[in-house]
Length: 202
Image 1: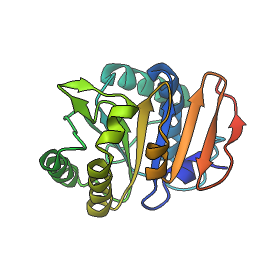
Image 2: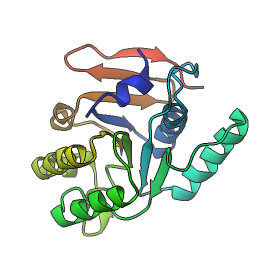
Image 3: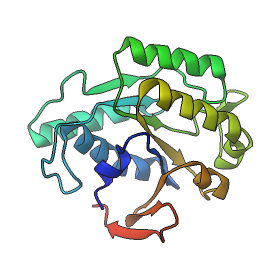
Image 4: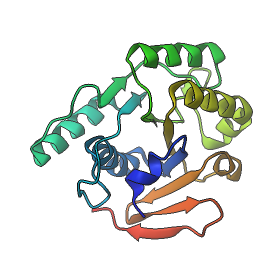
């Protein structure tokens, strides 16, 4: 199963989750790198790259540093319009904030690509603090409505990164594809299929 193709399918809503931010980062950044460059999971060139809008609400400096290292290792570069970054706050339970985000993305001429939200914990805050998946579930109807609005307005797929000790079934029911990442590998759940571990993370 090619993860890069899976995440960029039209209007796909996906969730990448693990117990630590570090484990998520080790999986997410190479995957995004492949998507932008049009490589499959084996890093074989298959098609032109897919534009990615990286909404970095945490660890922006670390993310940028690791992306620079990946580019240097691959001896390549990325066109400016293929990988966009935003560190502006995004609050998925706030209609006005989501409207601002959509307008911001349109001003950057982003559409028909993948939005990567890093992290879902930081895109839903209570009293100014990042939340757990249990707290996120309490606002799920509004979050779902705003995610669908973003997809409609920008014609895009959305992938959200979540750090959690335990995943909630209500959250899994919201999305199309879930990827659970661990230090030894990852497994994918799509629809009613049994999760299947497909490779080890180096």
